[in-house]
Image 1 (cartoon, rainbow, N blue to C red):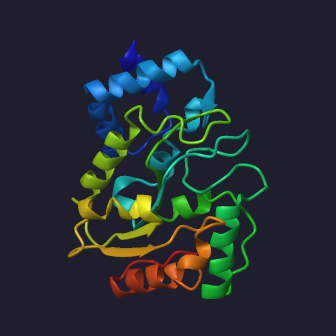
Image 2: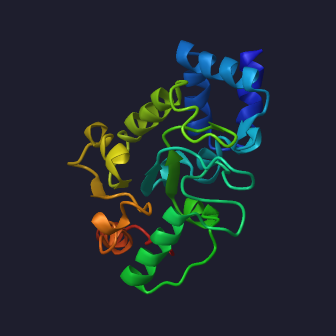
Amino acid sequence: MNKLYIEDLIKNVKDDYWKNFIIQESKKEYFINILNYLDKEEDNYYPLKDDIFNAFVYTPFNDVKAVLLGQDPYHEEDQAHGLSFSVLNNKAPKSLQNIFKELKKDLNIERTNPNLTDWAKQGILLLNSTLTVKKHEANSHSKIGWQIFTDNVIKELQKRKEIVYILLGSFAISKENMIDSNNNYIVKTSHPSFFSASKGFFGSNIFSKTNDYLIKHNKNLINW
């Protein structure tokens, strides 16, 4: 049952590398426990089943140019759709509003669309450390095993080089030890939340720093 279940969850993942990686992970005990837990939740979680692995749908393994690591999906209706910091509706949460403020200050780009699918399609892996959340309860799935999976994603990406890792806040920065800093570029600053944005995020120039590194390594820059 679990095998069929995972195959259903990743039916939209066309990239063979990511698909095979997820299938191999799904055979491990921790991942089987995740699936059993979600079964018991009976769809009382976000994002919708078809969207859980959207980060891998829109950003093939060999196309990853940057990783923007989030912590937990948004937990209200019409928000989470499998991409970190991105929302489906037109109401950008405060963290995303602050990201857009920094984008305006850094590159003078005025962005209002809170759906970041276009970023994902350009090679930014918008990865949450936890891929699901119980409706209306932030961080409610943070201990069901997802972090084992997403840590393994980061470790798998070390087979690649010249990727920008954008780590916002202490939680994301705690993953730094898994990243080969000799062959990749790490940009780290405070979280863009209401409480932390003024502690280093504003003025961090994460967007220009990312593009400067990509250009230096003969990669197409991101159209933010």
